Image (cartoon, rainbow, N blue to C red; front, side):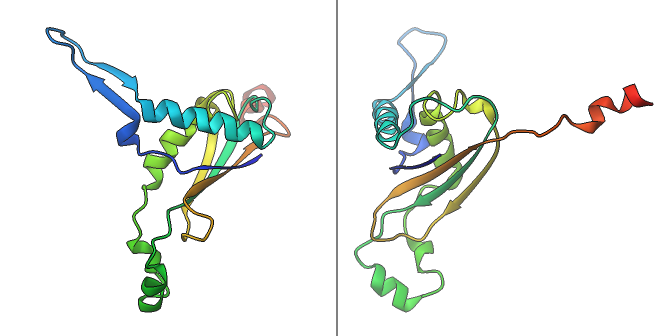
Length: 153
């Protein structure tokens, strides 16, 4: 499954914590930005053909495309090999947590089923800020041989 989704909000905006007056404990909750992003992900996934989550283990790869600034050509002329390093972008871990949470129950049953992942920050392009997510089921062809070593010995 391959999905093109909107650019995720920062994990710093995803969670909110409030300590009610007189309370001994803080309450942490999902922010409005997080709820909006989750809704956008559900809608985009449905529009791209996702009807039910993959059951079981999955591999998830993300390609994070930051917004391309207006002066990108000037930056590229000045530093053709790494001009995009100066472009503001979420770090991969920050984007990954928010995205994996939003895809829970949509593309896979739970993010606990993610057994392998990969991420790459891409060069900004004319298509705008977004994240491209590829999700594949992980299927074992046979059980791990080590599980049966004692039985054979």
